[in-house]
Length: 130
Image (cartoon, rainbow, N blue to C red):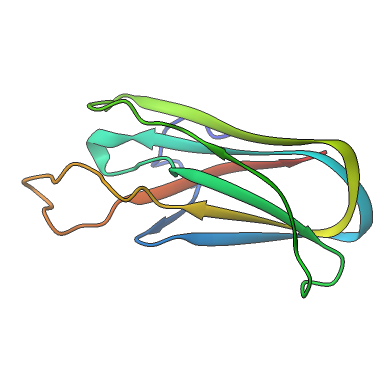
């Protein structure tokens, strides 16, 4: 279930600070042709959608094959709540048991007077693997 943008509802995976990675175990090798990650952007709350999400796949969690990445160029001053979908597709399906989403934090965010040394948060609402 996709959260609706209310970051207080407890349906988000959230962390503060540096880059993060989420690995999904599909249970068995299946063909993967499309992935998506939905993140919240609410700049006025120090919640910034990732600058980039890189996706890779593996059969054994040792050897990873990059599928691709998706970026969102943030317009200066965007403070409204926005649900942003980062989609990666491939022409030919790739066999994978594990799918890794690397969420790369924004390097340049505005400094806020009420939290000048606080790093931004990333809020992840949904992962889609087809």
